[in-house]
Length: 266
Image (tube, rainbow, N blue to C red; front, side):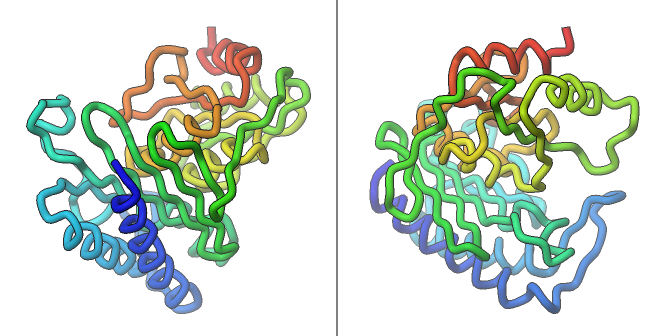
């Protein structure tokens, strides 16, 4: 992946963000499932993003949250040698926040190739913060290099988590929340997986976990977090599966080890 890919993804993210902002006060809302919302803005954003990306690289595959394009070709998922690169897009990460006119939503564009997410672009349309990363080339916020924090001790850490829509009181996610809450300095649920991963990358959060998000939620953020120096694994400490993301990302190894011990619910 190179600067040409990054420039195109940035252009597409800005087009998607423009669609979101133009509809923020007049969006049409429906439910995909109980408590799981979608708006006309999600659809318009994905359409704009898809056109730019696929016009730029017509032979690439495309995965997006909306319009039934949720699964990559088997050759991509299996890592076949002849598999095309695959764009992985969330046109509006943080839909509930967006619907309630609350900040903390984003456009997220990742690019997967040869068994790994290789590019990440995440744009916060409200703050105009653009987080970017190419595999092996560092993570950036509006062109300035960013790094994960040096927090070593969970008791000093600000942590975030994600819950699924319609979480129940006896869910393992509630148990994880309580265990981490007891140990960390403070715990947040901000409503955007993409931005949470960026905030770890920028040192604003010290750790974040999610066991219920989809590939498009985390695709771009995995590259940005890794390139910032953060540690990223599956929530049980094993290697992360980009297509089945159940993960923890932390700023340092001592804290990551402690986080994994807690959220494994051992």
